Image (cartoon, rainbow over the protein chains, first blue to last red):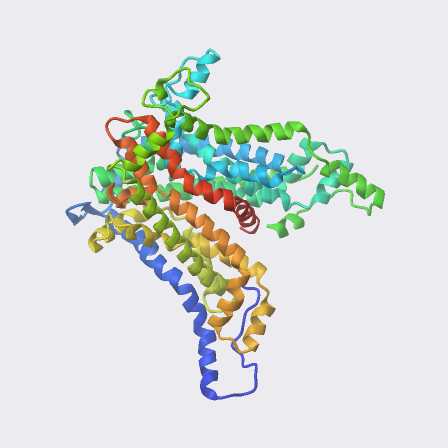
Length: 319
Length: 302
């Protein structure tokens, strides 16, 4: 990355000693000065809170009363012993799977279609990005009603083709599908553009040679595009993992109360954290949940990395 | 990423083709697609627009429209009336929320662009002890979720007396590892070393070199980064929801408040959801092209 740089060597013949010394200090210190605004702010709002969360998680800590006695890992054992935590974890993973898998498949399809020699390509690219500018809270409000149990448009349309109304808010799996749909709505086009960029970086003569060798459209897609797209896929999947497991906005506004449903059927880990911290005012336990969430993100991220690597490299060999 | 793409080229027939053969190959791959492709894209476009249009239909009606089983596809005339109700609802603070959102998003976007350009320039073009380690550190921090910071941040903001104040939303937004990474990538690719060296030989100080050479040449990337940070900040809900009350909200927080009241009229709620989208929609109309280019550039370089 730092392929070349300026070195602190005197270029010109000697001049006045003072200005030279000043210049050398300039070269030496400037880099640190330039990176310091970011690192100072990060230390204050990123690194310090990270470590402090660990500290808080080891104490009894009330939102109002503040720091209590040291309790060791009690907050962690308490949280891990709660059914709600496991429900929230299951819901989070379920929503994540329901959103990421169809989303990436659909994004691949859209990207492959956009990768054609289209008329008005800028227009089509912009059109798939439109949902991205709608804030998740607005998406949640809109889809909360589209998926309304009684009068929603979706149930209404299903009724026309003879399918009985689905309890989008009451049934756990259906609710998770509805929430996953919101995530997909907002992010599919965005990811399609990333994948499209990856596709366009693939040398065209690969396709040309393959076409001459008699490879059809599908064969070219699976034997050239997918394997060549591996780094982009890894990028998309990892960012989707980090973002997806933190989901909070959409399920919070999915109903009027923001508590994840009557039976916690769409309570997510972040909603649980918020509930423990700001409804039950227990910061110690909320901090423990935050760390557990972080561990989950790292674990799922590593699993996804391994899977993506395997899939892409297996398909990478042309037989 | 482009480099890896060429390196992993599979072995295929590659003898030198003649002119006619080249034309034939190109013709196979580069032909204009059929109408099916456009039909598919039109469906995708409709899927993106339909929820908005449906919200507009509901938002143009009254409190009973949401329950109308035979909803007309032609909007009724109440949208402006409903929009006015959103704007004038004392519990929602719509105008204050809009102003807050503009202040917060603009401040954060400008500051992040400045900080990231400075740091990106240093990482990409200057040699200094520890730069590699620091850069790896920056990249690693992008995996740290916000959730891990909210408890201490809340304690700190309460102690400072900042909770309920938009300063509490601005400050944590300023540290964007994504921004630093983005600018580092761009500067290392698009800014020739010769240019910097020439400026240095001509006697420009380090900061002068940054300001007059590096920053102007990084303008496209800086503009894109600013756009993204603006959108991310504008749509951000979790932390503002925690630290800001309904009395001094940003737009997403105010929007949530619309639905949380006791008697929900969804024609008003959905009118509000659309209103909150209008500013970014205007931005999208003018800068959508740059957004698309930014996403695609970031992907290839990242």
